[in-house]
Length: 116
Length: 114
Image (tube, rainbow over all chains, first blue to last red; front, side, top):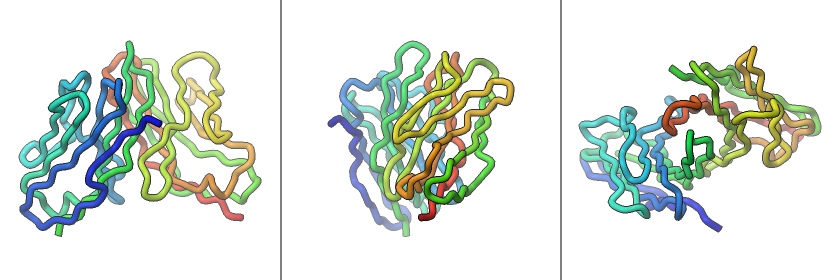
């Protein structure tokens, strides 16, 4: 059955290293979201795309984070350089937005990032 | 600006008893309202949504939610709780007229004791 996939599932890295997280949205979905979840901040929207175009990335630290959709089957979230405060679970979600966008989002399993 | 509040960090219920998880929202126009559930080490799963129509919405796993426009609430309910319902529940809201940006609440941890 169709589902959002994310790689890697776990990543441990050292401060200063580049981290790339990948997401494959559900085929046919036209909207992709990146979220970050921590105990302290809860679930935060980092960025989202519709039809591969970035619509809002105001939740993302611009100096070190970047999000792209090179094609309709791949979304990436990069952190360079990474910092310990970036440690969190990063979720990708996709959805099919029609009209005013009333449809639900389907979440991937997440990437658990630990920056030492 | 739109916002959503879940006033309870934790809700504890005995198995077999009814449960309610509270959610209130604020939008400038008509809202789209959602409930999601998160089990340990998993992503969020959609439970139900309110778009328009009947104020009582039925969703997955026997859950339902009641839209109350005057109280700007969208509380999640279930008549008889199961231990397997124990999880983290998120309410979310989006304005009818905006792009597809959804605002999630802070989450409520539901614990069902046997």
